[in-house]
Length: 373
Image 1 (cartoon, rainbow, N blue to C red):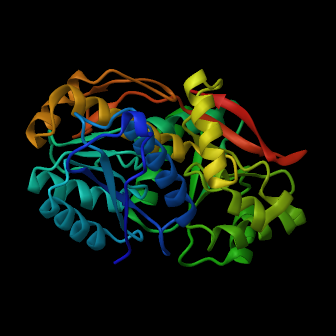
Image 2: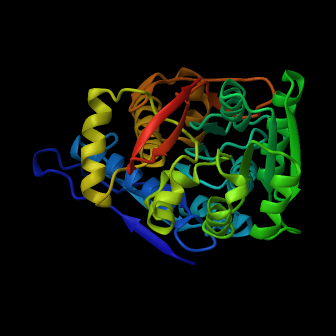
């Protein structure tokens, strides 16, 4: 199992003393995990830890981030949670993939370890309500309904969903259908287990679809699908969408170039960055050697929340779990507070800012905000 522990060196004047206070970080860093997302998430968390330590740590103790690579594997995440709990971590943080985060949340709940999920969006993150888990990312139903509103506002009424049969993609398809159908749109299900890129193009033509939503893995089969649709003269003008955010990352632009522009996706950033967010963006850009994604901001905000809770309520795990309802932390994307939302069994920030964004065809390195919640 890939492991990584990092204790950033604080400034000498504020050097915290005493044994390190450990936080367990769950991050996808190898395939089949979305590695680029994992790298951004980890960069945000490491920056947050570095700043906490530069400010004197938590109660005079330096914070140590103990990283475990989940590799998009739920069983690997469960094992990591057990290992980190046995090490005595004060809390768990992170994870990008929803199905993996669900497995981690269930194990954290069973072991009574606080888990702040930074980035996974599946509504049913736990089967039953738990006091041990909180989440920064918006629930899938909230973000994807915003995406559906964008499709309707753009005039789309025959919308194909090209999906792989995973829990996350099935949930997304259901949210889109339930929101779009009562408003006069037709949702066409296309099973990507049965269709290659060429067959998908034929189906889009036959179904008279004006938009196709890609609920598939990246880079395979998303990249071949985008290329096939772009190259098919019958589909000129069709909208391709990827609400899960594949076009956010530099790898998408590197693999697709101009073909990757004008593919709207969900991004959890405000329209204007605050002074705090601008400072964090500058620091993250230096670390990543590229523009940070919203996932990097989620990582930073997660550490900011945990640091605030641990400072104000102590490092006892039960005290941390009791503190979610009292959180009021200024993050990079607004004031973070947790509440109980219908149908969601964890403490939820309701809601982070939600945008529909695409890459500008006139300059694929730039993003255009098309719609906001």
